Image 1: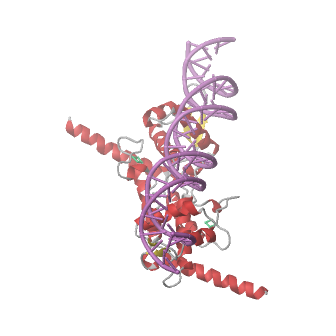
Image 2 (image 1 turned 180 degrees about the vertical axis):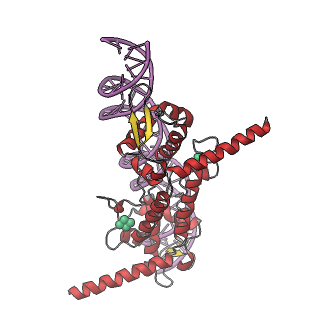
Image 3 (image 1 turned 90 degrees about the horizontal axis):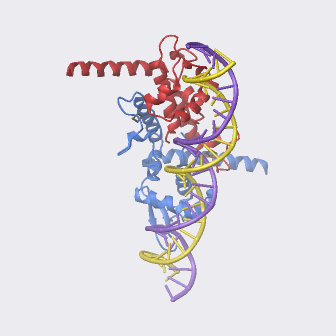
Length: 150
Length: 150
DNA sequence: ATCATACCTGAGTATTTTTGTCAATTATTC
DNA sequence: GAATAATTGACAAAAATACTCAGGTATGAT
Ligand code: FES
Ligand code: FES
């Protein structure tokens, strides 16, 4: 029941993107890679997927980069995770063409179904906007502390 | 976010064990393997772990097998999954000696923490007893249907 | 135009985790 | 003591994950 690092990266990267963004200026993937210390090439893949799923928009050429495709308050965490192809259902039989080994009347499927729904609902209840707010809050507290020290 | 088949097997096997059990007679792992169509050797490993975690008790020798270590209503699903070493926390930093790649103030950890708690709480809210009840219910309906056909 | 920038693509590899097998042993009953 | 069934630890196959690489293409600035 571990979230793939891919999904973790995607969420972190989205927060970074939102934080680095300044009106009108796309954020280059290189900056995000630097900030989050992730492989540039790998991040490119993730953003390609995020783009295909209309989470971000790309701007090519010099000065280009990525921009949120929608308002941050309209981007849910579960959407981000879906985009990078991380499944949120705990067993394969709950997906198209998927099957578990259990034949006959499966006794456990109900549990996994319930579990999957909780996971989905929880992650769908959180928006990128909320993450950004939290990040900003942490940053300012941190800055205050630094100032206090100096 | 998929549950390992190991964990799925463990839960299914526990239900099987409880269903096959008749007063005083331990259930051999071979019977469970047959019923669930799982590898005998692999199941052995799982039951070794379940035994170490006091979920089942073993009886050696001919006529031996496994027995629930406690009342079915006192065995929670999350305990079964814990026993076979499937983690229920979504990111590694939430475990002893575990670390994610994220340094500084991590913005996303709160989400994963919340997610982990939901997963844990949900699986802890279900007991083996409930699964057995459900299984029996399904069996009787199924038998009724068979009788109806004949 | 051409050059630097930065996105875009798909194939390929390396690593880790998961899943499962095997052989040999120990305890118990008949 | 022979058959049964759990017990152990090492090993191997397979799958999923994580990452790299080598090219491309669009765009803006000089
Ligand atoms: S059929 Fe998928 S869990 Fe049983
Ligand atoms: S430190 Fe574990 S998620 Fe950020």
